[in-house]
Length: 212
Image 1 (cartoon, rainbow, N blue to C red):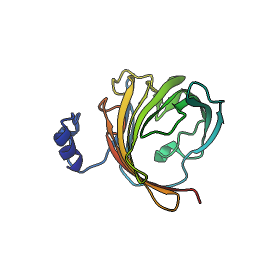
Image 2: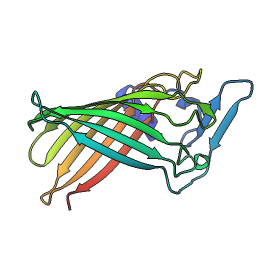
Image 3: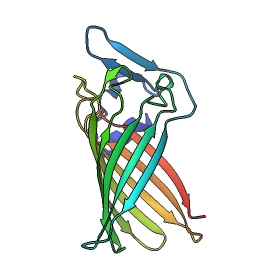
Image 4: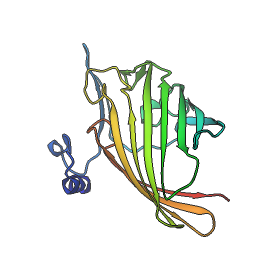
């Protein structure tokens, strides 16, 4: 009900949610073919998820822009049966860009490509790879407060005839950051699925970071 009220407030489509019972959570994966393979998750689960290793290298500064390249490895540790792992190894390479000088208004950009290590996930055929990108803008209001907006997108991951799975996804994020006097930062943000049914529909996040 809270998500439906939010969509009504900002005028965004609720997809097919009104067709189902309110205040319920259901994850259902279907595959077209001679037989329909499905996976329904109706119970709570917990455990170790996949492990990620990140490596980065920052290039020399040029044209008032700083740039870096990142290599990310996703190592299988969680189980697909409980929907907390992929049981496969993925590799991605990306390039990040940001202005060299810190100003009240700033931006960042990230572009990359993901190599998918397995041909199936949740019994659905996957593509060999997919592109992804992120564009963000930031407003440093004062020494304490910072407002940010970010647009995330990625190409289709699944090789399916289902439109929600074989098309690109777009997600908008809005957030606020408060810097404390002890070199820490407190962040609150939320995201909204702009492409409808192709990404997490609505999420809220809370993050605390410290240099100690």
